[in-house]
Image (cartoon, rainbow, N blue to C red; front, side, top):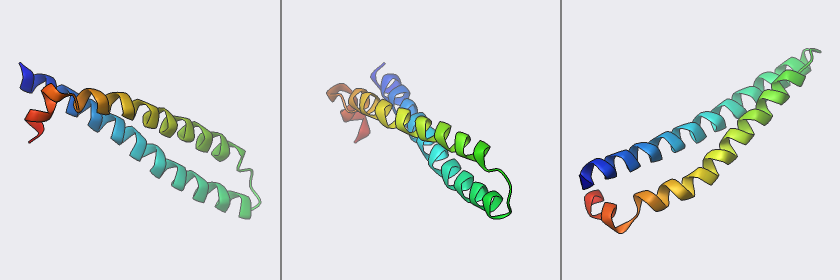
Length: 82
């Protein structure tokens, strides 16, 4: 069914956008916590590593977005999007 395919594509889009949003928010938090640790004389290295992992997750989601968008925006799905 076309509507089911469109729903699946929209769900894929929501997942990609959610992963990106989570990574962006996590990076902000990790930077803040890492800076606080550093200012307190503690080692913030682990926070930096975690920040890097979240950066990779965000970039992967950005790359995936184009493919997911192309599939959702296909003509056969656009008619269901209104």
